[in-house]
Image 1 (cartoon, rainbow, N blue to C red):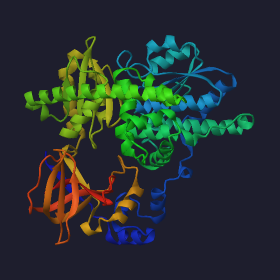
Image 2 (tube, helix red, strand yellow):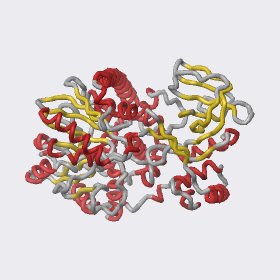
Image 3 (spheres, helix red, strand yellow):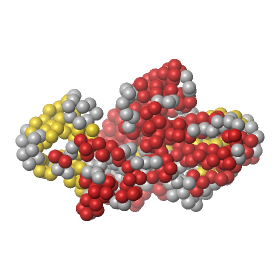
Image 4 (spheres, rainbow, N blue to C red):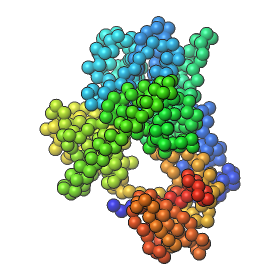
Length: 566
């Protein structure tokens, strides 16, 4: 697939002015301007995220109702159930609420459904389990649980919904529905993960309890110590790392670094993190997959128990168990990916579709989402994978930027039994007999809603950089823009008119090469997964690359990481 190169062209006078104001490298100033951070004060706040800059948490619709209902439960010693989800966002949200409410002395328990046996969300079949409670608080779910919430109300059980998934045309009839995607929510924070929404409920509940004098006779919980959970859940859910998300993740990674929580310390150990800095990459590729693995192949309770335990020995055992489950998950994922690619090879017309819809009766429901993501990365178009159960097709879908998956599924809702999610990820259920019709309808929906450029893989450079300028100062200053992720991608740079001084393969897959520009000494660059050498002396009209601190040293403090050459 051809890759489009886009070179941003920020106003040079703005870049130069901001560089002087902040005393930073022009390439960093260019990256800031490209992120609409040309105002020096705004740029400084971005470079130094501060919890004091968080929005007023009471600005969420229904927040006051939720807090008052939780206060009533605390005052009357009511039994509370925290009902969560089996992915990393849901698990960290559940752990967060459980730890916070327990610190307030609440009589609370948790419930996370089994992915395969029960499926996602609060359902009618959970009523009998929940009748012993007076209050149910959902985290990372609940926005579509209209029927179950009505049934709980008839049993005299109140529900407070906290969620971040896209609501339907009507909201559930709960005591309170806290969801920044509500059309009438004034917060403007629709980008929050489920754990971020839950965190703001904790902030408001603590503030309310403080006003009531609740902490005159008991210790006030330190919410900053819970930000490790917020950071992990937010990063794992791949939501935009802007505004509050950036602040919460930055502060949360500092808490993760302290290894205060035995479960996270144990997870870092089995992930091979060592004692070095914990970055968003370590969370995304080390911690989150192991937390997710429990809910994918077994039950998420193991991951929840790991996050909540204060026993280091127990944490080590649970982390080892999650690591083992994750290895099994990789094996299942590899097999499913190979089968999906084989289907696309056997049926070329499928690969030409606007959305790839594939199914197999034996595919594991817990791994379909991650395999769909792998196929999205390869083919750069939405993917939906389905398996069969009781004459129903159930599955997961993933999308690309510029194609709102939830809107596309809404266009096809007459063919679906159930669906939910957001723009980039969703789950769906339909009758097997409707599969062919759904494929046709989804392709129409995607074609109608997507611009053609949404299907093109694009690399965007923030600035054209002379290789001599890619120095240690730049690498250190670029680190100040972390954490990187959606909405704040790692800055990319372009260089022109290069030649290949030398190249070799490292580990049969990674290309290490020397780039020469204007007769200057060669600069070493590495291209992960390139798989083939370039010819010595070959002319390159351009290269796209990142500039990073060298994680391995070896006498060189800067690493150029190639993403493409031509």
